[in-house]
Length: 116
Length: 113
Figure 1 (tube, rainbow over the protein chains, first blue to last red):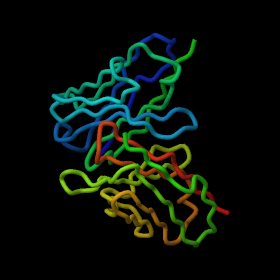
Figure 2 (figure 1 turned 135 degrees about the horizontal axis):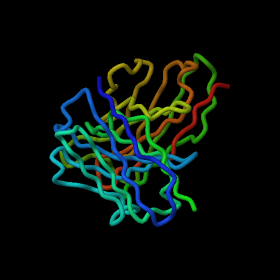
Figure 3 (figure 1 turned 180 degrees about the vertical axis):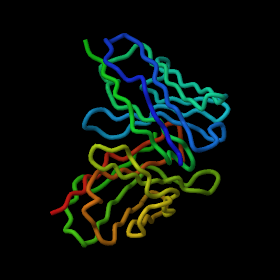
């Protein structure tokens, strides 16, 4: 069965950096686009990024462009999100999701808190 | 960017009664490939989102058949034929026809009356 397990969330100061990971299993990882989607506390869902199966193309929301970098290691069935220059408004639960006609399977999420 | 607008934002429903959520997009969601990439998600309290419907009306595996999706162009609807206690949560529509960015509706909170 498809499993996505995020990790790496933490409390970080404004301007700091953090790297999130997502371990995938139960499907052929390299065949799928993957996505990061976030949810601020008590708020709705916000798409953050897509990456193609090969990792050759990446896409970002304007709110994170230039600060966040998505990548993947298909040999390790893993997805990553490098987050730099973090701001208070980046505080959220970050979900990784497999993409097939849109995000179909989601992980349980990892909490990133940006606060001094 | 395509703006997705859901209504109502709060939906109290009696157990066993039907429920309907509307989602409107700021432009037609027909993609250049002819498909309409409109999905519905359910987020139960304390859980991750779960996709219910993709491409307007296709139910995901394991989704009860009391959930159905319909619509076209800019107007879409999620219907629950008979609400059960486990349906409590927040429902989101999402468009993937014109991206980036992917965009979500604000969410509709379904509660039991």
